[in-house]
Structures are given as C-alpha cells and as structure tokens.
Length: 291
Image: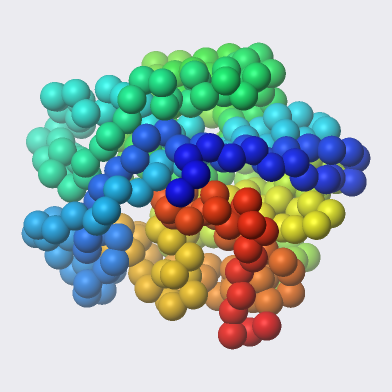
C-alpha cells in the first residue's frame, strides 16, 4: 500500500488536488472492527476479545480547491503510546483505550510535518473539518490553534466515547447545522464551497453526528468517509463494526452510499482502509449490485 498520495483533480473553478496520507497505523480488537452481537452486546464482546486486526492506516485528507485548502481529520500523534496518556479520562476509558488499540505513530508521521512536506503551513489552511470526535481523528489538533475547525453540531453535542481531556485547551470548534438537502441520498448536508463541489454530509451510525466529506470533480466523485466502515468490503456486504453506536443508522447510511454509487462514479475512502490510496491512484470506483 502507498502511504502518501497526491492526485490532481479538476473543479469547475480550476485545478485542484486531493492529498491523502497516513498518520501512523493502529490495530484494533477484531470484534471492534467486525461486530459480534447487536449494538449493545457487540461492545461487551470486543472488550472481551483477545485477538487484534492487522495494522490499519490512520488517514488524513487534504483538499486543495480554488476557494481554499481543507484538511479532513487530523489523525494521531506520537504521544498516544506514552504510558498514562489516557489516565485523565478515568479508569474505564484508560483501560479500554490501552487494552483495545495498539498504535504505531512516529513524530514525522504527524499531520504537521506531513503538511509541511506537501508545502502547506497552518496559515494556508482555510478549515479543518472533523468527521467525528474519536481520538484518532482529532488527536493532531494541536497543530491548528489559529485555524477554523468545523464539526457537525450534533456530533459536538452528542459525541460517542469522546475523550475531552485530550482536546487542546483552546479547542472551540465552529459547530455547523446541516440543512435538509434536495439530494435524495444524503438527506442533510452543508456546502463548504460556493460551487457545492465539496459538501459535509451526514452519515450517522458510527456516531449519531458522524459526517463525511463528499467531493465532486469533473471526472470522479470521492467520499472521504471517516468511519462509516473500516473498509470497503464492510460497506458492500453490510457488515457492521462493533464500535458503531447505532446499527440501524449505519444500515441507512450504507444504503445511501451504495445508492449514490449506483448513480455516480464514487471512490469510497474510509479512514482505516489499507486499499484506500490505491483506489484513488487507480480511479477504482465503488460498484454495487444496484448499478
């Protein structure tokens, strides 16, 4: 698998780029990625599980659009493996996070150094967009103290398994309310650029306020999918993750993504899919039985 990829893309207003890179990698309990039981019992099952998955990437995305540069999620930082990293969250959260996940993150893999290598400074970023408030999606925030940070208001008000002691002290994001959309696939969304080519779309299930970023280009559509699923196979085969907050909402989101892909050439890009960057490189769009 390629660990960094930059792809030129064409927007209505001019040329742009989609960059993707891994901020380290993580192993999770096998039953955290693939649920055993219902939405409640699956949580017990993954806590009791002794098997881990293979290492999965912790992805960050950068969208360079004529209206500005957007960063989607901030990935992980190298301190996550330090002893006592989670202790401020209390005994239960400390136990779950130290026993259920194995992180491997080097300092040079953090989002700050990687953005610098791509030629971007903090001041050049228009907005950081968070798909949701799980650790491996916000834990690079300390690089963005002066940057506008956008998150769905519902996610901010009703997070699932958030770890606020790990937020930077200054963290006060711009919470946005999604609007009912004419798009029959994603019922609530918010354009992030005037052209509507980049949208924040509500994709609940992993958390109730979880969002993805939908990117429409002249040649292809891309869904920066956060943790809708951990890989494309789960989406295509209706497999839920033990870490999902609501299986019912996940099922509706899976259907919405598949239906959208039946009408558009959509490259599906979850944050922990080992094949995600290969799909961008090869323009491999999602195929479904609905096509």
